[in-house]
Amino acid sequence: MAVRGIRGATSVQENSAGEILDATRELLEEVLSRNGLTEFEDIVSAIFTTTRDLNASFPAEAARSLGMNAVPLLCASEIDVPHGLPRCIRVLLHVNTERSQKEIVHVYLRDAKQLRPDVTSAQ
Image 1 (cartoon, one colour):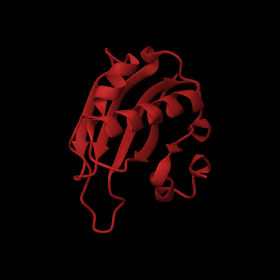
Image 2: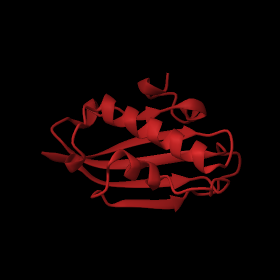
Image 3: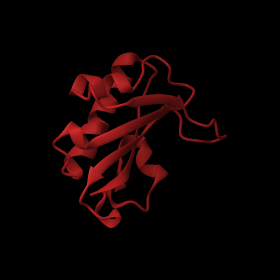
């Protein structure tokens, strides 16, 4: 079994705890579903980043609310690149999986779809 990285991103309309947590839960549920992950035991760790305009809540709280209580989680600030997508939440999950690198499904939702137009799930 290999450890693979799964990327995802989403966006919110405003800097509020409710929006950040709802959008992060939606993103995580899509990533898990599209990659056939049913056991949190298969998740090695998760890194969340937010753009500097989001600070009302830690996205990791959404993961905890889904039951990822034993998964190591880390939140950080995204690099403040000029003209970057505002109000964006990103995640990198490290997972144990039998899937090949080509079988991994990266998920981009809401305005974050524009970040990776080359990724099928962003369409």
